[in-house]
Length: 112
Length: 110
Image 1 (tube, chains in turn red, cyan):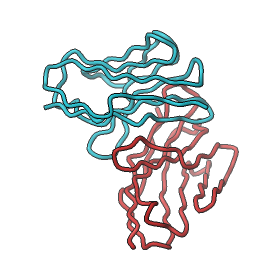
Image 2 (cartoon, rainbow over the protein chains, first blue to last red; image 1 turned 30 degrees about the vertical axis):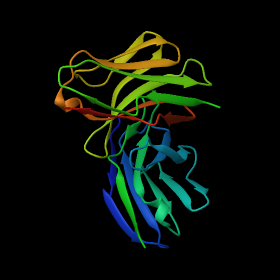
Image 3 (tube, each protein chain N blue to C red; image 1 turned 120 degrees about the vertical axis):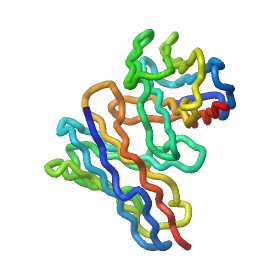
Image 4 (cartoon, chains in turn brown, blue; image 1 turned 90 degrees about the vertical axis):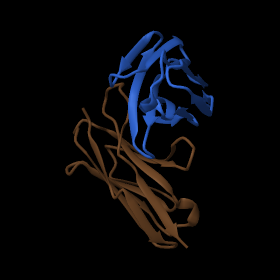
């Protein structure tokens, strides 16, 4: 099955700086890569996703890049703000119905 | 639009007691439904998934079971809870176009 590795486990950046979270996956058949943001006590919320036929996708301050050859994808947050503080999960899925495989999460801390 | 309802939000149960967590989906038909557990603060572990009524696949052996009595209803159960069943349980529905999570149930077994 799929295996997703996520780094770092904790990331602390100054407000206004950029944050980058990286993930690798093992199944070359995986074709959908979402990123979720989870605030304390709440369910994960989708913030951006990318499919395997696209190399980069951007939505305001958030961008995701995908390198299919290397089997890694990254989340980029620019001009970080205090409300960006949360746990972020990457995930991958192939063609099966057994759902997303998640990374272990990154606790992003925005220092004022 | 599609919505997913999950309840209760929090639950404290004694060891050995039964469990029933319910999840319902609106605005879609024949969804793939999932139960995840989140323990120790972060990681999400897939417990069960269902592609249709009465169809349940289990990802890990455990003290829990799942049922799908209706197309848009997914239930997580246990006959006798263990301390290790404590955690944050999340229901989700998914298609090839994305996944949506419920708000979660915080279960504490005491």
